[in-house]
Amino acid sequence: MDVQEAIRSRRSIRQFRSEEVSKEHLSAVLEAVRWAPSWANTQCWQVVVVRDPERKSRLQEILGRNPAHDAMVQADVVLVLCAELGRAGFKRGEPTTAYGDWFMYDLGLANENLSLTAHSLGLGTVIVGNFDHAAVGRELGLPHSLVAVTMVPLGHPASTGTAPPRRELLQQVHLEEFGVPWSNPTTAC
Ligand SMILES: Cc1cc2nc3c(=O)[nH]c(=O)nc-3n(C[C@H](O)[C@H](O)[C@H](O)COP(=O)(O)O)c2cc1C
View 1 (cartoon, rainbow, N blue to C red):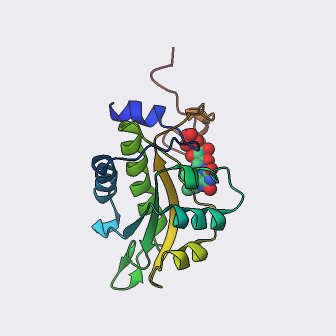
View 2 (view 1 turned 180 degrees about the horizontal axis):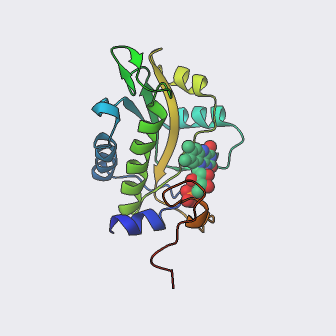
């Protein structure tokens, strides 16, 4: 599967079969995180691999009402992507831009690598971000320098959904200056 096809056909998967994720596939997915780009190559991510059914249930309880509720225990693995604070976007302990800590950005890139690689291997993922981050940090014994950012159930898909619609490029892309419509060269007459 090439990159463009992987990008277009990946979907958030919220229903999983009970089949195990092989060691090889799990390693490939973690390697994809490892090779993500990051601010000045600071690689501020840490990943906690959760397979213990009781721990997955506790994470599910923390998640509470969420469309990914079932996925937390159905998926063979839950990867919790954590970030070390004060690294991405910092130089000598000081933020270098108005945006402060860039950990969310770098974790997003790592998460996309993870999701696309999983998809290319026939596995499913859903990025879960709406939960009590401090409670998950306590459950996983994170030190104070780390925060849990996303939980990502990873497993064999039981079903794939249809793609939620995307805004048209014309609503997102501008030519030279903001507000000047860009015309798509592949569709322009
Ligand atoms: C940062 C982030 C947080 C998300 N949090 C959740 C979540 O808490 N629960 C959930 O079911 N999906 C969550 N999603 C998945 C989005 O709902 C999904 O990516 C979006 O609807 C587009 O669908 P697609 O992934 O199938 O293309 C999250 C996605 C991102 C990028």
